[in-house]
Length: 87
Image (cartoon, rainbow, N blue to C red; front, top):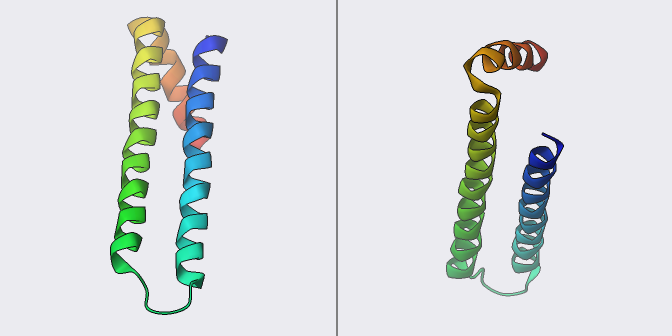
């Protein structure tokens, strides 16, 4: 299981780095003198939308894989415990 967790963690971390770059790009664009380039701003936010979907897919695929590896019985024990911890 450790390998599965570390792979998903690396993928999520990678997306986080890309988010940081998008924030930097937005602030750089807003810091420029003159008129705001709305087309460029929209392009940056479109990239952010792609990253959001990518992160969602990474998490979804990871959870589906965990469920598959655990099987019905162990999943019925594991996920309720995870749910309790999240509250």
